Amino acid sequence: MTKQSIMKRFLIILIAIAFISPSCNKTTSLAGKKTNTVYHKSTAVIHGLSPLTMGAMCYGKYSITINDSTAHSTFDTLPSNSGIDLSAATFPMNVKLNWHNTSDCGMVIIDAIEKVN
Image (cartoon, rainbow, N blue to C red):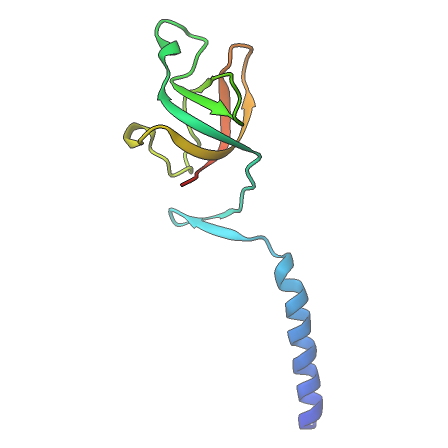
């Protein structure tokens, strides 16, 4: 093999790597675990403990307004891998999240969440 043929092969390998690399999933490290990047569909403000929970089984523990809505929703917990400690948090807290409804009474389940500064 000549030096020129080795350089051609090296160049072909570099070009192939350049096309393949962007197609890989981006991963982030969260508490030592590798997770796929989550794209959040909504924005919200967590207001803190909900006054609606007193004596009502239908409402969650925390109050949240999703996508600048005038309606307040509630939720009980965050995903365990969220990295957000609500018991030590300062409210109001801006977040990006994925969520879904659980019932007709305004309680939601948060599937993924990230704090926004």
